[in-house]
Image (cartoon, rainbow, N blue to C red; front, top):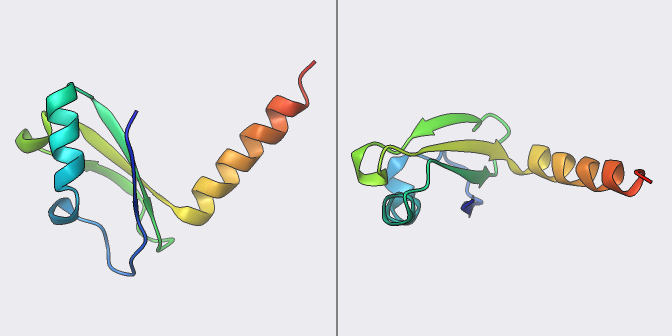
Length: 79
């Protein structure tokens, strides 16, 4: 599962995801994730034909950190 971090103020678009497009097309990956800086830069972005039809989910960094931390806490609480 590919992840890419784009820690910049502008919205992340297809122009900034050429590496992700190439990776998904070559490895036939259907879904990837992009960690973004801006809390409003959130959503699903189709990579199109250059990405082999893959989709990426854009997740703001604070939300990604929260989800990862929460999953660790929940996993630690299991017997």
